[in-house]
Length: 297
Image 1 (spheres, one colour):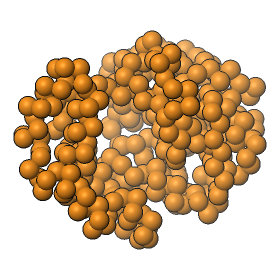
Image 2 (cartoon, rainbow, N blue to C red; image 1 turned 180 degrees about the vertical axis):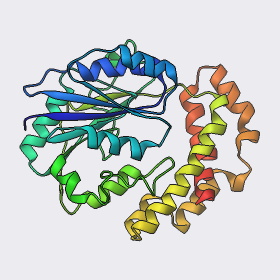
Image 3 (cartoon, rainbow, N blue to C red; image 1 turned 60 degrees about the vertical axis):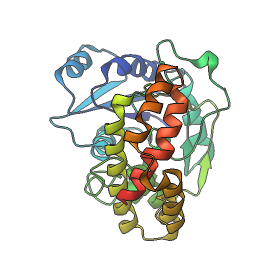
């Protein structure tokens, strides 16, 4: 491997990117790397800040308007030159040996995928590394943190635009797992290197965010239907919770819709005020957000 490329889509969120971008630029590894930042139609504040950044590994590609995650990653793929690509979300902060770990996994595994771990944190500056379980988090296929050889991406590419299906996946959700379905036949091996971990910034739950979170679940349901239309197999139905059992389970959790944002609002407000933000989010997810997703399927 002569060069490893990081595809790093950004859309506003400057305060977080001021922490995460320097971290991925300043890596320690035995081969050169480049970071292709794709500005997906952000406002002028982020564009101005990016123009002021100077680093030999930095490349910037710009969309005049917001095109979404799939299109941004395809733009980064086309602009990159590496033998392998690491797809990394802009709200993930990395350690200096992060890329070296992905490179080692990809070199050792040959035609494989390098799955990076994600550990959710509330603060990025300073990072909560001291309080983070060093073996916690999750490591499954997500384009928030994954390394893939370029040859594999080119093999499953369906259009000249890139490996992601940006014509189908125009809203939130499932574009990464749809790509993973196509990669399976060519990359049966999954490598997991413990150092290929990132701290994923999750803003604290706030009641004001709930309408937007519900809207995102509706988008996710629309994209789940598109995912299944493209790959009509039971594994996708199960993954997307498109079964009668899932519908019954989530109706039970929400008491047939009696537990909703209006009825649970006072309890969630009280929990947030008491500092029980995680508990409030768990209740919102099980009684409001997931049922909203299921009903929109």
